[in-house]
Each structure stands twice: as C-alpha cells, then as structure tokens.
Length: 288
Image (cartoon, helix red, strand yellow):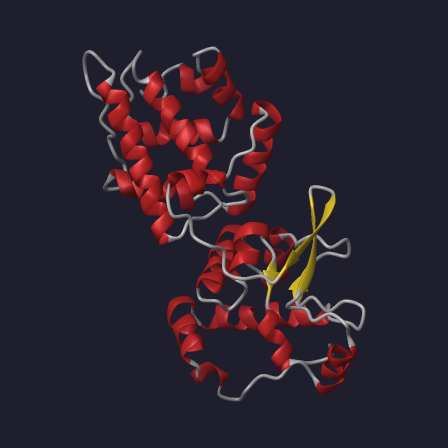
C-alpha cells in the first residue's frame, strides 16, 4: 500500500475532534502515523490491515513507542482510547494487543484496492496471530463481549483491562471477599484504608495504572511459578484475598501498597498460597 486517502477536513470529523480535544494535535498526528505504519505492511500476499511483525505477532508496543517518540504507558493509554472509540478494533486490542484497523481498507490507494479485489480473503475475515508459538486464526474481529458476572469474567483469557461494567463486577467481587473474610473473624473487621480517595479508586489504580506490557510480563511469571493461567482482574483479586488472609495475623494499614507489592512478586504469592507466609519486604511489615 503506497498511500492512503486522508480527507482535507478529516480534523472536522466528530471522532477526530474528540481525539484532538482530549489528546491534542500531537496525538492526532501519531494516530495517522500508526495508520501509515499499518498501510506500509499491506501487500498482495499480506492483507491483514494489522500492525504485525514478520512472524505474525502483534508489533511490540515498546518499539512503536520509540518510533512515535513517546513512552509505553502513554501509548498504551492512547491505544486503549482508540479501541474504546472503535478507531481500531477493540477485540483485537483487548484480547491480543493487536492494532487492527479494518476500516483502513476504505482509504487504500487504487492499486491496493485492485489487489484486494483479486484476493480470495478479505482482511476483515482473517488475521493470523502467533500466540505462544502456535498459529491461531482469529476470524471476524468484533468488539469483545463484556462479562455479565464474576464467573464469566474469571473465565475470560487475555483480559488486561476492564470496561466500566466489568470493573463494577470486579469491585463487587472485592466487597464480597471482604465481607466473607469479616464474617469468619471472631474479633476485628478488616477495613480497606484507601490512599487515593476511596477504595474504588485504589482498585482502579490496581487494574489500570500498571502498563499492559508489564501486566503481561507479571502474568507470564505468575503462570510459570503458580502453574495457573489467570487474566489480570483474577490475579488482582487473588492478591487481595491473600492480603485479607495476611491481615488476620497483623493489621495492614496500607492494603493498596500491600496488594501492589504482591502483584509484582509472584514468588510471594506462591509462598502466601502454599506456606501461609510472605517473603521479603512484604512479609517484614513494610505495608502494615
């Protein structure tokens, strides 16, 4: 794909106006740079309209951040914004961390459109993604279906971020876990002493603040150590439950910091799970 069509009044589009208002002109420019990078990869034999490496994996966010002159956390927040506003495919981003823009086909140059017409497969129908060494065909990328309850949320793979409804489900799961813990204690109830204005804001920070690339690395370590495959909210809830258990032996006055330390230390999680003890600065009382 040699070039793409950009309307002279593109910035007057309501989606673009919203982007400029919330992110500024600099990120508006980065958005078009991302589309350009996707377009560069479109050939007669490769018509996915997705930003991938040569072996079919999602293009690393860290490398893209370097190319665009920004940092990983800021870029991931922007890509989450694009997916939430359907400027890139939401399911592809939420589940695969793949930047997929099927609408770019409508902006292809005439030569590329002819190649697409000749092709037996359209890019919207099939995108090949290499996940954990296995080729997986992911068809008809549509927005990820939101979980309807806690059980459904736990069962979902690859979830690093929650939508508003899922976050409400997560908060309710935490409240239930606290109520269950307090109901079994003979003396002294656990009270979540917040550091960001409310318990809900603390939970938002635990779910959203850590960059997605770091979350993936933590979950991979957790899988290797714990032998259990978990999405991010399930892992956070597990660490909160371990915090509740630990608070039976000694008061924890900084639960947010305690949980955050557990999240980043899967070895401490397995110690707490199997031995009932906590290693390192967590166990020595840094957050109590």
